[in-house]
Image (cartoon, rainbow over all chains, first blue to last red; front, side):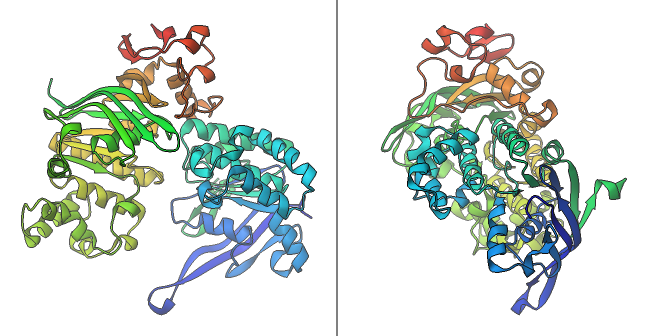
Length: 236
Length: 312
């Protein structure tokens, strides 16, 4: 089912705010988009526009107020427990700040082992799996014994991506994955993401406020403005 | 020449479980009303230099060299003397406004705080000056903002409040440490305008620390590129962007969107064990054996100071 598209249909999201949560604030209004395998949908918009909220809704981390998220033809809110577990494994999220996604008290090796043990990887395969993963994301075995605080921002982002890749995702929601990185490291991560997409046929939702980065990465581009999604087709 | 700040052979080492060479023999000066941008990758030592100038480094830091600020060596002053200078003559704008501002105090109180710290005037008068400072920053109904808390304002607004608080005493030198990091383009524009206004109206000298080359180009008169704790190239900003000499500088510019995001291969060396020769040599496509063995000096050539055997 995950080789099919991942679609958001008429997603509206409202939050309760104000004194005693008595007010409703609408962040997203009837937003629809489709992410296809091997393609990137680029999502732009100013800070606070609701880009990350849409990413979290599509990843199943938040429920929409109305509308639905479909994996193939199956709505995720109607999935059984096992199907939903598979969905959560196949649709991963990579955040702007990789250190927030990594346990500061665990070494690179321990962080990677955690994922492999969740996947019930046989003990004799753990080392080779770890080695393959490090090679894929461009980290060295010397870095296995380091803690996140001893790695650079780019290295932490590579580690976060490597942990995601162990789950063999069909789709990755990339929420400002290079916003905290320097230009040279940003270029490295963008190239890595493109190479992985070409080899693994992964679909990306690429969220960024940087238009040049979004345009470089994406097959289709949309912008969230006043809660609504404006695509290139709409503007033309 | 009217030098406000002269940093000579500044080295900073951190004594932890391993000895970290964060900054190695860095020298530069800033004239009155000049903007010097210090650019480079995260971890190259830019912010360590800012904190060394402000004497805000932790106790495990060993600082060598000389930091002459208006004829006084900041490294030789007592904490009491430094406290009298900080905020009044030498101010820093920190990169994260949500950490720089106190969440339980109003914006008005925090913008007016330097007057209270330096006992310059009473609270009422200071509050009026803070309101005028906010108006100059473009907050037309400043009285409304004075009573607000940081959580009620956006990141861009908070960054402008931090700039207002840091510069309210018109210090001759301001250090802006990544003032636009994490802000979207419209907010970056606002912060750049504030810093430009500050320099033009008060003839303030600005040490701009940033990894955003577009911001550096827009604001600075001169630019110094840092790599692995050293300045590897320093030139007038336009001369630098028109003709960068060091291979790392050229690589940085090639990583920009307009040049197609061409990455520099490899990663920066560890500050614990930097290479003995040129620190960029392991990633450089132009070097030879000499580069791996001998450490190049920062020498003047073709209107640039550059640390590369192949550029002279």
